[in-house]
Length: 343
Image 1 (spheres, rainbow, N blue to C red):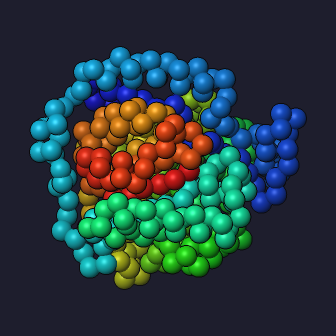
Image 2 (image 1 turned 120 degrees about the vertical axis):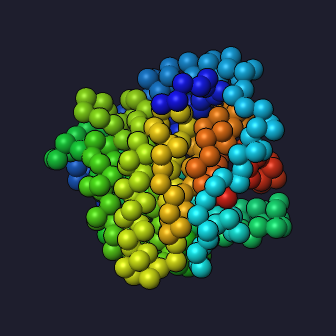
């Protein structure tokens, strides 16, 4: 962890996990995973998360008066040093606009909150808005499907995560095909590891339009429970994912893959400067987290712009961001995000 001052931190990012192929409702009215022993999913509006969020907002308000870098210093950092582009590279000449969530939960994001036809139509509207806001960069659609969902109880193998069935993944993939959209498989590892959670996804990642996302918020060590504390990943975890994706590119003669890593605090991603850059894998650090627009801007500056990796992303929350930043607001950030996600 770098010792520089934290500029701002957002309230817990995700309306977290639920799930199984079939769901029931627990006594609190919260969905529980029906095929995982009645595991109640963590959620971001818990009392613990609310207390933590209030503390982080106060700290952010104090710290924003002391920026780590001047505007001129930030400008000198971008564009970040990156390998030469390979044929078929999507970034940076295209902006990805993605919808996030899981079809089995209305709490985890827009992907599961409204019927598929309405969801895809609304996504198309956002893609057009981003194309209009920045006519120099074509916008394309994507679906970000939480395929491995962190859980509040250990489950049969003690890993605090639930893998979605192939039938559900195939359903979301069919929606992406209908919309001519990319598909991101989003992984919340719980107490498992990136190394253990990627093999079941390789049959999908072999496809040229399927990419990967990692969510450090729900990566916890022994003794910690997803949803109660904010998790963390190390550059070594990201580098393993990069190596796996790069091997797929070579083996199956694919265009470069994209790897998205969510972040809304500095400790969520340790040793970011040690992430290996490979022309076969384009790495996006996505500023996650909800809150007022000033806080989102400060967090983007603190945890993404001031720690360059390769490309940047920015996440918006339809229900929690007040106000919701417009397409013009987002493309006006520095650096302009190459990846925009809606939850």
